[in-house]
Image (cartoon, rainbow, N blue to C red; front, side, top):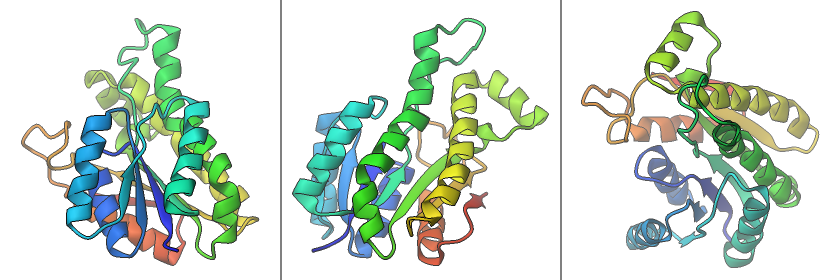
Length: 229
């Protein structure tokens, strides 16, 4: 039975490149996002390219929904061997006007949902010789005055805060999961990615480059943190 990767936050950029890269290595792909129609189209595209994929629509900021998705993916595709979390939310852009629900929303997608996925998939991940929890972050999460200024200017304060929290959580998970024989690693993208919603025409980073770096981490199982420029 093939290994299954949950691609949390599937879209048309980095997550698509990750699915193709890991699919080419024999992974079955559980695509997760809110839009069922877009996921269905993505499954058809990946299957036409020779990959095994299935769609699991759901809210990645809802822990119970995430747990159900993990169970459904396991039942449909087989044991979960890896999680690739690219999901993010854009709410709470201005922290001075954001309400509590918006702040919780960005944190739930970045942190709470990911943690729910890890906990639900942990029995499978532990049984694998190469189980892995993988994540993607933007540079907004770095704690630096210049980066903070960019986050404010871009009206991405909530996303910046969520990325910082995810960065810390991935470091903690990496240490804790070592005991279970599971690797955790994260790629931080320092630049705009071509073909994504952030691309204003000046993007220089290819999604395939990010996917290749994530595959490199998965294979080497070290370091915990890497960057792509």
